Image 1 (tube, helix red, strand yellow):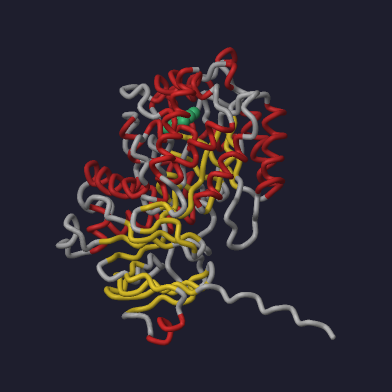
Image 2 (image 1 turned 45 degrees about the vertical axis):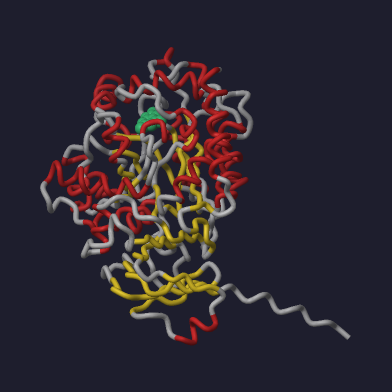
Length: 462
Ligand SMILES: Nc1nc2[nH]c(O)nc2c(=O)[nH]1
């Protein structure tokens, strides 16, 4: 007699019930009172009114979202997690002054330091409503160990969807670059490590929790050879490409001096514009540069807080969006944005755009769109995340709007975007709670803060 295989356990059903639902779908559908149902990792229902009684009765868990705004989980399109343990340095410097202060410190990173920094940074990021983040790690000291594996371990611990990039620098000061020679790598070692990172970690399957990208750092820290060969390697493996571009006037002058052209023309000459490329910052763009990004499907990670902190400028988000460029939001590294809150990027993106372009430059819903569907599109995951629609992954943020700072704001999306950060009732990734009532699930935040402080002191002391 054969014993039948036991039936697989039914996927847990979570109902988020009774809140204002901002789906961020293409029509901008909102339900003043609505519900979202997650079955396992998938969204299986979204609709107006309370959830039907039979759905509630069959649920494994009901999150009472009355008084809350339910949004898609936020998508962070640019970060340098290791910088979490070097915050508060060179606080009044330009980008170049800030980088030259910090490169030698980052040259001492090791696995333990990166694991601790990434755990701290990711724990905070989920506390600001983020459910998917990328990371741009570009400093790999010889004796540092496997730094990419260390941050992937941290992401698994926090439970966030992760798109780390294998970054790189190969243009040291002796060859005309900005970083000191001892923090850059040889091109062959970079390409071999990039290939290894893809083969070891990249998961292209639908619903993936981990995708790798390749990310040579910036025009003043990488050679044209590295950019060109990284693009070939990435395209052979179907992974995305990321870099810093058009962040400052200093970078623009560097490109004119060294390459005789603008940063965007430099990248175009190296086959670095396209629908698989996203650029961090993109502050200093001419009209033809915006047209080139639009024509090639290149997208942008807008980092308003870091751009303000470093005095770099204000990106032309209205013009980029009008031209059809996908724009997501990014916190950038914690050393150039000490708050590192993705919620704050929505707030600042909208306020800064209006400060320079008038009250209609970005609506509050434009801000929410950039932080969700915009980011999903930038990472090539617009069919899986970024909106609350049946068939998408269960990445959701539930913001409490019934406490003193927000209770009387008529429009819930305006309360989220223009007010202070609301408390988070819950954040779910892949149908699993990672934040409950403003606490990261499974993490002792006080103990983590002590670990982060110790790691920071060790690194800064040399
Ligand atoms: N904001 C930042 N810009 C950068 N450019 C570069 O080469 N590195 C950085 C960085 O870490 N942050």
